[in-house]
Length: 238
Image 1 (cartoon, rainbow, N blue to C red):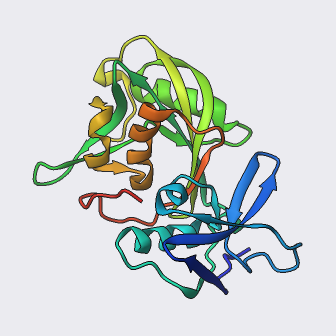
Image 2: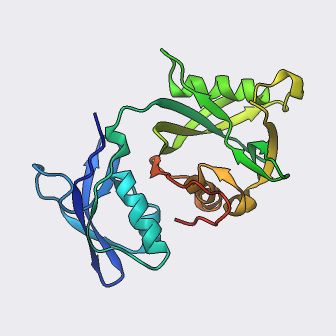
């Protein structure tokens, strides 16, 4: 199966994005008009940029491109490519643990040549026969030495052919000695949640949302995000 790339139409009414409102087993989501041929007509809604940034918009690849341009002041109108990473069999399924303690998020820090660093959320590949929920606890133990209890899934991210699941995890214990951990050269680090929007963290489009959700409340349904960002330095608020 390959991703669709046929065009869909992006419509705006003044400063609001026009989308169709659909429902699935998890609740409401939005789609671009004309993006679902052969389906029944759906009601249309108008979303501000702030509303669109926190909506479930499908396909996620097209939504990423539109929100990026809109946030930078160049909102596209008319035909754009329909890019649906969810339509492609993932090369890898990953599970990540969002662990917050005393106002800080647990991350894995990787030092780069020249003294810089970047961060990743603890987690790793889901093994054959394993659920993402089981994988996230196994990976958390391997990378940090912490045990935990899995809470709700807060985000699904498609990146570089991977399908990534991120769960809130209530963790117990203390980070283990470095020689007992398997981090591929990284090291656990607690980063204050308020610093996440400016932290070079993968996946980039998730970092500022964690800070936002921590302040305002976690989403009722997992956010659905495509993330094609290749540079961690520039800020991302879309």
